[in-house]
Length: 256
Image 1 (cartoon, helix red, strand yellow):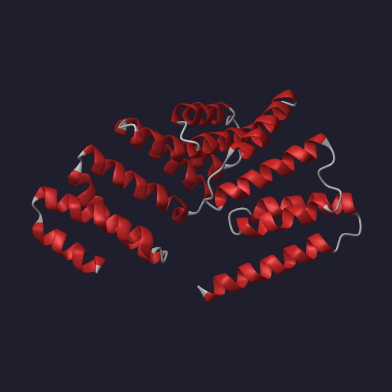
Image 2: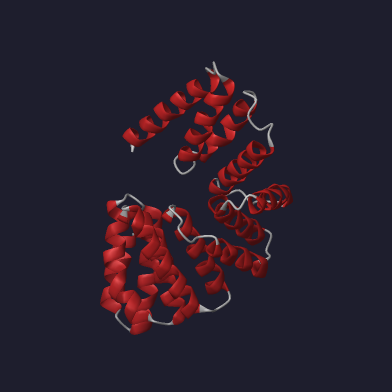
């Protein structure tokens, strides 16, 4: 864990140096923009911090640059798990009009994903679902399996909340299938955890009892004790409902 923290610190330092040492503002700003996009998953807080520095280089004055920067900003906010708001909505809706006029499907996929996330946070589930499905409509030929898997995952979550468990399972499996295209099997563990919880809500306790320990072990291998604990709690409740007291007791011992 200390090694991972050190790498993040080194990365942030390099990013700050790249932003602050701008000799040819436009060319360097474009390069920094690419670096910030690549940093979104690892350090969205750092991206938010550096966006103002990027504006100081003159980036964001053209219409395209403004919308690119706005989408980067909302994406970073979304990844820090703050609730998205009406101001974010205005930025994304404006960007959608621009990218639709320029037929930029790659950016539209990202925009509609963000639009769905905003409506989700605003409590507008029907609008969120509509936006996520519009994102799928823009996904033909997409080279971003991570983003596409997130769209499927969000649709699955909304379906599950509406009690549409079979549809939720279908979407979660698509999230897993698409996420595996990244070549990183650990990336889909969160989706597998969500899938297990959906099976529990469906009342398929035998499925949960069968799958819980292998998934728990995968979470532990990835040092994700939070999701490992959530996984076990679903397994314990499933085994209790099945009358498998010994298995439930064994899981409870792991949980403690």
